Image (cartoon, rainbow, N blue to C red; front, side, top):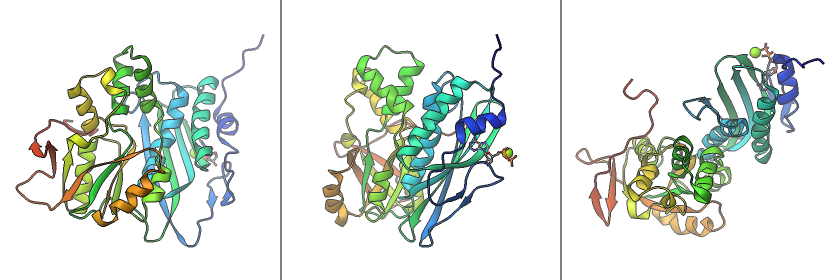
Length: 329
Ligand code: ADP
Ligand code: MG
């Protein structure tokens, strides 16, 4: 009996990653020294890159299909936050070993998501090393319509999509091996399979004044949007979207902590000028997921916190911190 050898580098590329450039604007995809891509004349190219590392961005032992999905999803989330339409991706894969089952599952997770958003994998790199996956995505935006973090003005309403905190709660369910029943499954799914909010980002590009995706915790990320816009914000804790799942497993204080400083949501945080809020909210009904108004942008004032949390209309102090890879290092 012959034991099949694990696939080598070229076999990995041709078996799992070549032939996935089904877009007319890919002049040359995987296989040559570089890809050749046709950018539409009337659009700007939007580019983003994100790396995920085993043990840092996902627990060791995470199913390969989820890792493949996550590697692309976190990048598409960045394009969504700019209002861009995704087009192409490059994939750099550092693998400790060549395992066909792992590669099959990883590539299925990646390609299934890519197909849903019409993204062509046009190149990459494959090396042996610790499990580290870097994806670069590129997409298009109509000139002058890009959503940035810097366009918010005092008085703008602040919205968030989905239910911030559920992904972090899902990670806690996984790490603490909680028996969470149906609620636990929903939360784990939020962590394992984040859905990039591409359609929402596209809809926002003519309505929102500023946008970003929430990856490091709502409070910290709102602070970044405030910094970029030169504003401050009031966040109304009573307005945070209620999770049907988190309270089944966690007490109210933990739920609020997940919502404010848990990471990995990949929801969109954005601002809409007050005079356009009714137009936006009318459109909201047709969008998946629901968006919730959670506060207002305010003038920046040296004596005041950049993000002020209100409960029952009164300022409160909440202890939170966003995720920072090098904090305390
Ligand atoms: P080079 O030696 O010129 O860097 P490689 O042998 O690394 O080329 O890659 C050969 C081709 O396969 C290139 O087109 C490259 O973009 C593509 N490629 C390599 N790894 C991947 C991957 N993980 N996913 C998609 N394409 C890949
Ligand atoms: Mg190479």
